[in-house]
View 1 (tube, helix red, strand yellow):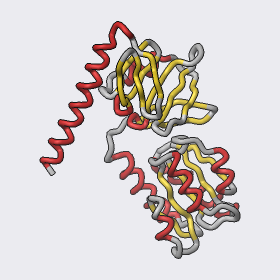
View 2 (cartoon, helix red, strand yellow):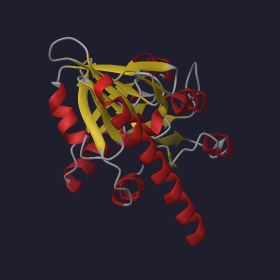
View 3 (cartoon, one colour):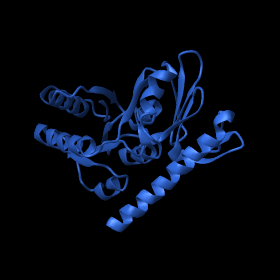
Length: 250
């Protein structure tokens, strides 16, 4: 689990890091904790899906935690943001960026442990969404399947993985090491050798071309073009029927 701790006061930052390490030891959940002294430093080093949690001080010199959270939310809508604050004065504004919770400063061990327990249970116990985990630019990325738009070969033993926001990650992995796993999920379709797409992001398949959201045009296997188009159409109609059934149940 990758966690960022952002606070311009060293003592407050050290305290949160220490409490998180204690929680890691007690819960037996491995944590890689990265410290940042400012919101600007965080944003300079931030990549979508590189962190699962961010502990973010609201009041900092320069960019505030709330303003930083707004920028982060545009890049990574799934990240858990927990604010650190000495006052609840700006809590309504803070929660407008869909923060999970807040912790008063100086941080209290019981409060940190409670927030982490609730957050992990909420985030991981009640969802079956699998994640694609890989290393890109020395950073471990955990990308949910439903946020994975496309995987394709780059150079030998390298892959380009594109997320729903259009961000691309390069990782040193073989295509088969990922495709063999993803093809067991009915959202993913091999359109041609070395290119795997998530059908949730397909806008059209015709004339030997697959068009994804973001105006991404990809070649497809011409000999299997009819089969690929039928697979996508059947998937699309199955989703529509599933939604209609759900609405009737509700």
